[in-house]
Amino acid sequence: MYAGQMLKPPHPVARAAYAMAMWVNPNNHALDGGRESSAMEREARGANRRYVFGWKTHLGHLTGGGTMMANLEALWVAGRTQPGKFTLALPTGHYTHGRISAVLKTAL
Image (cartoon, one colour):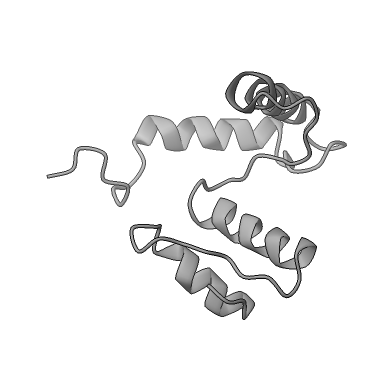
């Protein structure tokens, strides 16, 4: 009964918009291939840094998937920058945390 179920296929208009965007900017994950989307990413990161978190500096980027990719990268970076430490997750945490930790062979 959840109205925002994420398993539905994308709307045909969304598919068409994505196809058109890829036609003009197919490599939006690199600065030299996606200047416009990279500029939008910098702007979004800066707004998050200032208004959401109140940080003076930041390092990071936006991910293509807010669940799997963002959690994977966060846990991967944590494991590389804090070796020997473990990640604490509540039982109500997202199910990907345990799966990703198992793949990365890190303690959760």
